[in-house]
Image 1 (cartoon, helix red, strand yellow):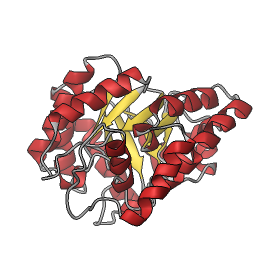
Image 2: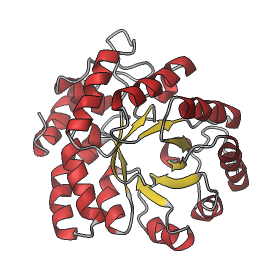
Image 3: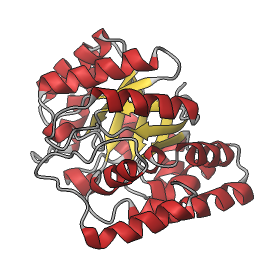
Image 4: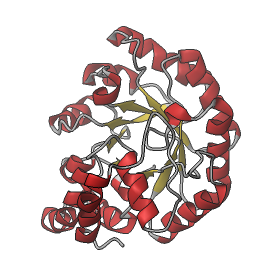
Length: 291
């Protein structure tokens, strides 16, 4: 079972926008040292939207090789094309990913039945654990709890990343899905409460910058220790908010560059963090004792 603090890893790039493999290795070593529980490669934070298919698959393969089985690697393989999601998931399985994370189809706005058939087809075709990913703020497509319930009985569908921030969905899903169905928060700001309510972890942007603190907070919340989880969460609160002051991953890439872990590179149409927001992000890093 994959539980705890799962980092939605950035994809490091040079100032020219080329993939930076040396920095990727440095990031993996950083997360292994800082007790991150698992890594998502090429999710939203990993700029999946601007990587071509070859780059997408190569980043996943390199992360798997660099992690070398020490912690699980989850490959971002979602698409608004069912066939493309199948192909990406199959390639992730071939290179040894432990699971796939599949965002709801974006732009084409499928019905709930369309979502059900989309995920069922992928899970029927590719024999790897699949994690559903619901983030309507980006996709304008909401995977409703009743549809998740229908999918949760599939042997290859093991969990859900729920990024609505609606905590009441946790109890609904726990009541209607199998006991071993995993629930991950996809919203850093509410991840503490999500896990206190019975969630199994977080797939986190903030964990890029403060991995050890996020890991400690999530582990404490999963244990049900509200008092100490909230103390730790308070230290993360500014990061959880201010790493979204511009579109993700703009602020988190700036923060990691400021920490000396990656170059400044990011791909259009995303742009570097605006100068006016640098002080805000820096103050949030200081609040979490990140330098």
